[in-house]
Length: 162
Image 1: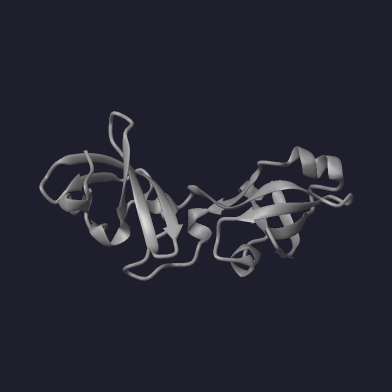
Image 2: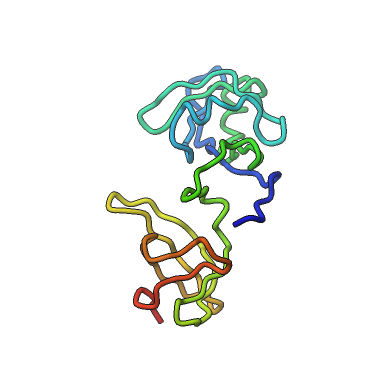
């Protein structure tokens, strides 16, 4: 994971709709919370400017300078708010950002080619990684069954599904 692209856009939230008539938008957060979002003022290469954000039961409500009315807010539905990977805080040795491992090649500890990391899901009991084989078939393994300190990622063979 040493070859992280510092310019790769990382989505922190997505606009899911309008809130009111003055251009506020509802956000679904992909980051840890409002403080993670508030650290940034410019999104999408400077195209969107975050003026304010507050909690909402379904995520957050934000005011973006470039969105001035309800029509603009509705038109922005589906727009991700992203920052470059280099704008994210540094992580510890055993930590990773999801964006950094999606697409990494995986092999079993028995040496079998498995495919690539397709997605990461956060469940209450622990994170699960979904691996997609070359034929499109997918299977899931717990994060604890994976060694991400290598390239390719090594998965314990007992968790591999055919």
